[in-house]
Image 1: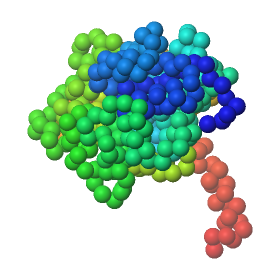
Image 2: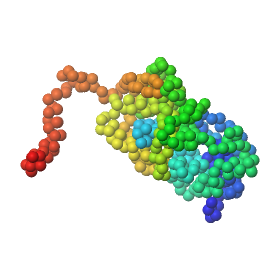
Image 3: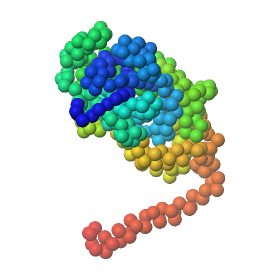
Image 4: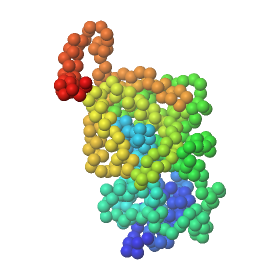
Amino acid sequence: MSTQRKVNKVVLAYSGGLDTSIILKWLQETYQCEVVTFTADLGQGEELGPARDKALAMGIKPENIFIDDLREEFVRDFVFPMFRANTLYEGQYLLGTSIARPLIAKRQIEIANLVGADAVCHGATGKGNDQVRFEVSYYALKPDVTVIAPWREWSFQGRPDLIAYAQQHGIPIAKGKEQEAPFSIDANLLHTSSEGRALEDPDRPVPDEVSKRSDRRTITPEEAPDQAEIIKVEFKEGDAVAVNGKALSPAAVLTELNRLGARHGVGGLDLVENRYVGMKSRGFYETPGGTILWQAHRAIESITLDRGAMHLKDELMPRYASLIYNGMWFTPERKMLQAAIDASQDDVTGEVTLKLYKGGVYVQGRASPYSLYNKDLVGFDAAGGYNQADAEGFIKLNALRLRIAAWRDRKAGKNE
């Protein structure tokens, strides 16, 4: 820790688990400051009440404990804007962890401003991407804030040191938590990600202890029923608004798609990705609802977006995905790209029919009042005002530069 920093009050991103409980005590002891805890409900599926009880037990004032339900804001203002771009990082990853970090950081800064805190603290390690995502967001929203990153500051060398510190300070250690976990899990309403020791060899399949654990988000395709299921997803201006004819809020849409996808083994992904800090990492991701949503949105765009707009979106998407992965949500360039993406969504309205079967999502139909699909033009009959003879001039104009090059090469004897 830098001896030059003086902190009066800090807002800690607090889960109530062992690691953040250790961080809470370490902040009190090392910085001798007032600690405010913030626990975000992003749909991780855990009871958050114990976080309040643990914070109280560690001396946190009741008015300094914040537990906020951010599920609707998460889906409406972060997940849905990302899906309007059909975002995939490195062609596969739906960015379930990445997209949650800017919202957590945003709310932390809001709380810091509310309670007059001069610092914020996160529990991300110095090896991962999350430290970048949190801290870039903090600075974008409160440029003079002090950021405390314990894993880059304290002297603990490993799990035994943390356990010893917890025992020394009377921090409860749940049964089975004395040793380093075989893998770690991060969860929210969009997905779960599993990483760590059991998954560190990329040449070995995902072990059953990960893919078949009791709190998994989706089953395996082998466990899925033999009977396919047909579902319908309705869109309005690029966002899903109903499932199977029932109008739903953004968070409820994702919750229902998660339920349907999980039942059919949709959304499991074994992925090796390139971390922002420079190393590769392997993880197992479960994103059942997001996988369905991505396919459905792509399908409705296929009939409502102009070819030029669709192709431009496809060119912009990898850049947009990298910005989210790297924690650059609040940057001018992300906002510029978002404006361009959102401008393309005015007519992305209609219904998509999909079949779920054994881990797969298959488009069965799509319809829209703003469809650009013209059956008269695309048919083989001479109808719809399209003259097939017109194609000759178009082809010759496109081939002209190639013909000129061929004439040049012939004249120079290059082809002899």
